[in-house]
Image (cartoon, rainbow, N blue to C red):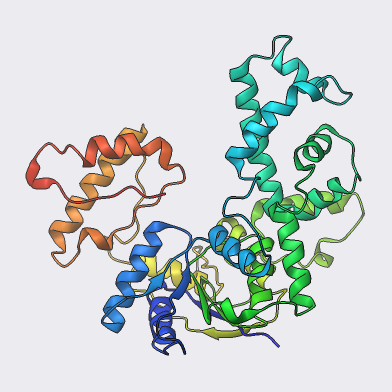
Length: 405
């Protein structure tokens, strides 16, 4: 039996209301913290404000990130686990840097030896060690079964040899081994749940690796675990494919003389198919586990270009804009969806700043705290954001902003 419940909606505000309703039910121990797992500090602030608005107060709630929460659970189950694991990426970097000189003379390490050169400069060795450390850290999270196979001596390439050298004497202290031990303890019910939180809520996370899902699903055998996840589509959309995926599949099957109609490829909504691969894979992963589902979708209709796009995605439909199609015409003053072509990152931020000023002027009820701007590479844009938003030409046009993540 599982206590795992999945709450899905196409609107984050609805999910926040559902979370607020859930935590209105008091915990049995009044001094216990409400655990709400989030993926960013920005989400933590937004959720806490929404909960305060819905319930009048948001107090005694903690918002851990997935990694830190899983480590807390491991410490409750696996005794004598240190606060800082020896396989933290920063610690691994120095360990790799220490053992590399003794390994690069072995067969299979020729590529690393050629890269480092005869002198093996310290800076270059440190940079290489840092890259390898980050790679191993990703392996521990996304490929734990591969790491455990290396420890059993199943492969002999340079990464496997290097990992066995790093892990010698600490085989049970890395994330992959801890996860395996935890799952084993869950299956054998060798867990004391007295120190476990009574309820866990996971809110607004767009994707999690299998490692975290397995841990949370294991916990749900003993305590209440609730997922509050954005789902842009109310229909089943796991089988839809983008144009690129469709072409790739067709080309691959041509050599096997498979008819196109036998492939049963579905396009659904082209925007969802091309840009929703991460969400599609995440929901496919969750569907492998037992859960109860509560849905609350809202169709915004066809009042604007944006609502038309959202409605099409929600209903997994594709508009036909040709003659006799079902295209929907909106007014020329509709500004719900805009695209700007800019010649540089600096110009992008300047246009964004002007657009926000225009929005604040037209809608006095709109506040800076209501605006979220997303970018795929915050490191690139951060200096330009500071230059444009932090030092406006007119002090009267300054408004508060923060850069997160």
